[in-house]
Image (tube, one colour):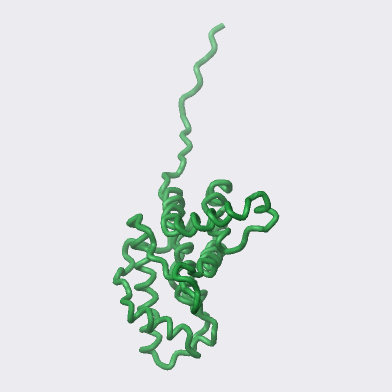
Length: 215
C-alpha cells in the first residue's frame, strides 16, 4: 500500500470554496489542461476505489496538468482545496455513504437533466489510471458487471451490444443507472477493499514423513 486513506484530512469544501476552485481550474493558469471539478470527482472515486492505493503525488498531475501559478500561495491554495475534496470523497466511501455527486447541467436544460456522461467518462479514466489493471486484480465478470452502469452512462457500450434493448426499456435502464450511481461507487470501493484486506494464502508444508507401508 502506498497511502493511508484513514488519515486523509476531511474538511469538506464550502459552496463558496467549490465555486472559487472551479473558477481557478477554468482560468488561464491551467491552460485548459485541468479537469473540471465533476471530472475530478469521478476520476478520484475510481482512483480511491481501485486495487492499489495511489498517492496524491501520482494523481494530482493527472487532474491539474501543468499549471503556471501566479504565486506559491496560489499553488498551496489549490493543493489544499484538492486534498480536502479528496478527503471528502474518501470519507464518504469509507463510511459507505452515497457520494454527494457534483454534476453540471447545461443552461436551458431540464431541472433533472444533469451531465452524467462527463462524470462517468472521468471515472473510467481513473480505472485506466490504475497501475494494476482492474480485471487482473479481481474476477473479470464481476468487475464488468459493476462497471456496466458507469460504462453505459459514459456512452462506452457499443451500440450493437444494446440492440436487443427496446427504446422504452433503455430509457428506464438509464434512469436506474443514474439513480444507482452514488451507491454503486461505494459498492465498487467495498469490492476492492475486500480484496486488499484479504489475508494472503499460506502454503503449509508438513515435515512429517509419510507412514511406512505394511507388507
